[in-house]
Image (cartoon, rainbow, N blue to C red; front, top):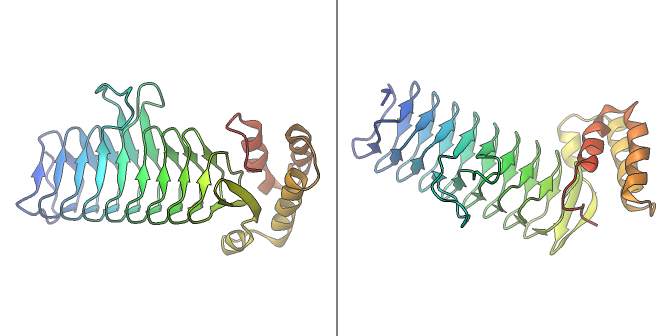
Length: 262
């Protein structure tokens, strides 16, 4: 174990393969074992369990009872050395769980930086999560889910395996996603349906009036003009030549997925 100059409670159990950065603090009865690397200034509250292979960046904060880097719940998993990778400046509140990947998937689960995972959130195997996302209490991601940057999940929302949610999208509380949510779109319900664009979120993040107007026009093309998805993508791609904010939307729609919410 690489020693930290942070506060480590004597009751914490830290394995020989664990590598700690500078000023890492570990609370009472925490268990950290396996090939685990933890970056500088990270705080691990009491009774957390972290297992490897797991790589954790800097300045993350794990509140009590988190389960991080555990073997996944996929029945195909047979003990292969898959991994979990977590970026910097994330907050994981009480009872947050994140599982390692599978060899049938990405071989890894990846979490970006500056994300907030509220109480009892779950990130399953092979998920890929971007930056600056918020997952409210009890939000649940099934396996192989991809989440873009600046996505917000309401409480008790859940998404089907292999689902995708694009950047700056908003998923309402208690929503059930069995289809993909394109960038900028608000979706809610069981099963979720589109309810316009995330205008308030875009304004808060500094999008110009012109960009927001173009995004809304693209939303109307997809959902209100009775076009095929191929026709909508072609028209929005032309608009993206002069409005760069539409590029993530075009790229998302061109990728194969579960189909978009309708």
